[in-house]
Image (cartoon, rainbow, N blue to C red; front, side, top):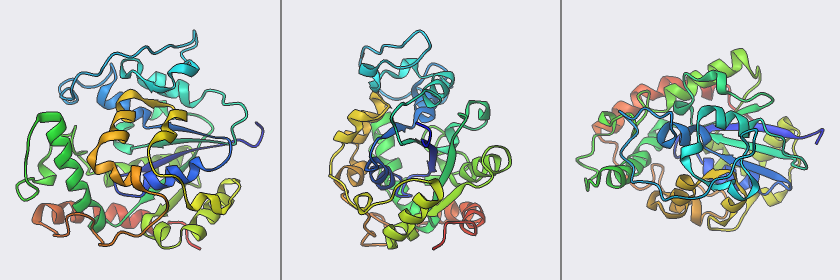
Length: 301
């Protein structure tokens, strides 16, 4: 399709990336690829087994590839992580998707660095950011669940120290540093005009931000982008690993993904865990300079 748009959406947890994906999924003839680099880093055959090794064994599932390394149609939604090398990721991202108006790739910056040679050609880039004061208290709840799933640990939020987690739980740059590094690399080497969206702007004025975003990207905007069905059934049409498909369907901390039907500002500014504890404050202090550098260049209306 001559006017096909391809873009990668980069975002830390709790930057409204789930709602953004569901919104973009409402664009007719869209194709979503979900966290392929993240799958490769955590679960694929090239993962660092000294770091990413503690998840429970993945159930067997038949995953069929063509001679050129592309997923067969019956394997695209729920492929086995054992096929997910970084070269596999790039192959899927650069594949032809005839008839698709939008090809959207959702990713997390820490799991690309430093493998910039695996960035796909032909993509625009969008970065979702949010005030660290809002992100980290809620992210701490995610980490609590990850510790339970990966290590069988039941630990209270009061005893969990957010900035002392292993790198398979918490990125060494706390997500914000890595996101800024990828933004800087892409701006200097790939896409001179990447778009930055602050999640607070998005939830405060979704129609304004989304219409401005679509105009910048050359995408059709309609009010259909403002609401969607709850649940995770839409992943049946995505290119997504079996691991992530299971996580999106079952993780307690992803209730917001399953239950959301539109953009809604949270009842409290920091989500489930309102207290800014010393560990959270250290994460905020470390991350704020990177956030502010990107915030100055955010999409404004």
